Length: 252
Image (tube, rainbow, N blue to C red; front, side, top):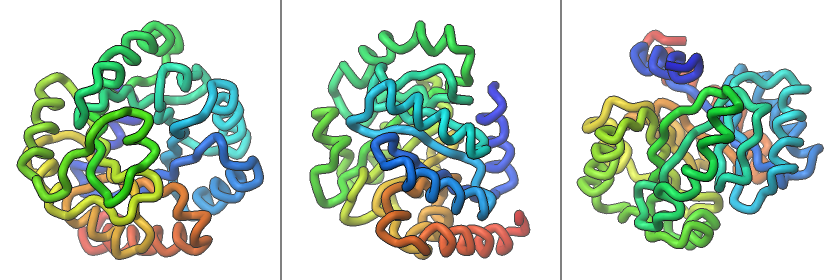
């Protein structure tokens, strides 16, 4: 088991909730610097790098920038095999298990696997699950798949259970960038109650209460991305909320 995954399991065992910041390499450099500095000031120690339209060059540049700023646990969140660069600490080696497009279930993983193995970075087997969020997101359009229905927690649970039986250790429940609303409580609960994996939840989290709801219903890590630019105070208030949640269970 790799260093980051081991740490995530340790936090899950202790019921300690965390935040990850998602950095899109297509964001202007000044915006990324501002985003990362705010995150580091508040003790955030997981940084995801990825986007739907980015190139390998922009991904590498973003990783290098994060490294220069002192960001820890720089983790690739790849949209395809071209987003794999060897300067990162880890990669969410994902299969889009909510969809039925073979390209994103296995084909792109086959193309990326030799590069990932050669790089030596930590690869975390991840079940990526897109959930209906009220609009057509970039992730849905690019992947050409249907999301999981947001009112069918039994389907989400069965999907995650299948992923776990296939060896996946982390489940990323994503409403997508620009989602109208976040992942429903019932979906998070269903995945949490039926698997032992780490649960990331992202998309549509624009308030501290939305983050708290995700944590209280089973999320281990809440992912914050574009919301930081829409509301400069969002990250600070969500960090305060994380502190309150962790204090309530004696883990901060």
